[in-house]
Structure formats: structure tokens, C-alpha cells
Image (cartoon, rainbow, N blue to C red; front, top):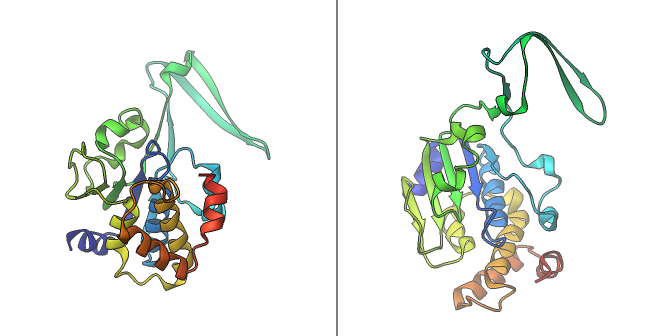
Length: 237
């Protein structure tokens, strides 16, 4: 399977779940995150607003790796900055600039990450990657031009990936097909809980999009330790 081969060959991987699909993509992305961590991959997850209702799926927000190299850029033709120092307290970090000429204005300052281009990007629930990133490209432009595994279950997907796993199944079912052969025993319960959360979100607590395969998968995930009550209590579906 080409997706499995790409994952096997890649060391630095970014997972980009949709934050706009009603809650299915993020827990499924976490299942993939746990799996890749167990494979000793350097995994980052691009999510700007982690839903509080999903906190039960992770030990803490620090668990999720995020881009590390953040740059604040001021054009030389806007202001001549001669000195920089900072103050760091328990509450905040203040960066002080001494300006010899010109003026520093908010609109002239740009903020972005300068991390190295990843070997692989895996998107979940995103129909068009460049459109999804369009408002984030100043910050995350380094993600462009990497190999992409595009995983989605919507009919309007643009098939923008090197590998496109787009179908009518839940994202949890598609991801399970990708990771089922990976050795993830050390996080088996955590992965099962994330995948079952994705199924619950996709089916709105088994009220729609029901198939025999979904019930069978849910049963197997609960046998692996996923707690349906904890999931429904947190999702409030």
C-alpha cells in the first residue's frame, strides 16, 4: 500500500486535521499521532484551537508537538532596529526594540514558522489543502511542496495528494485501514479511544451513517479498552 510505504520512508511528518468538519478529524488525527509516535517518527500536528471537550484523549496540551521555530520579522526599510532585549515572567514574554529611525507598526510585522519542510504531510477531512491553508500560509508556508497523503470522506475532495484515500467511509475506518498493520501495542487503548471518538462524532452517537462495519469496528475498539461512556459524556452527543 503506497500510503504505508510513504509513512515508512518518512521521518518528519505533519498531521493536518480539519477544524471545520464537526469534530471527526481531530480525534482520528490523534489516533494517527499516537501510532506514528510509537514508530519513532518526529510528528507535529497543525491545530490552532484544540477543542476542550477532547482533552480526555491526551495527557496535556504539551503532548501535541507543534512547530518550534517562530520568527518575528520587521523590514529594514520600515524601521532601523539597533537593540533587542526581552523580559520573561510567569505571566508573559515581552520583547523590547530600540528604534533609531522609522517606526514599527503592527501592520509591518510578520510572524511565521521557519521549520524545515517535512518529509510527509497527512491531511484529514480537508477537501482542498491550499484553500484550507490560504489564511495561514504566511505562518505555515514551509508546509507547501511536501508529499501529501490526503484522507477525506467528502465528495468534493480535490485529490491534491500524492496518495488520495477519499471515500464514503468514516475517517476512523480509513485511518484504521492505514495503521492496522503497525505495531502500536504501547498505546493500544489510547488509539482505540481516539478512533471510537471519531466514529461517535461521524455517526452522531450511532444515529446516522450506520453500517454493520461501523458496529463491528466499535465493538472491537471497546474490546481494546475504549470507553464509550467517557466519550459520549465528553462529546455530549
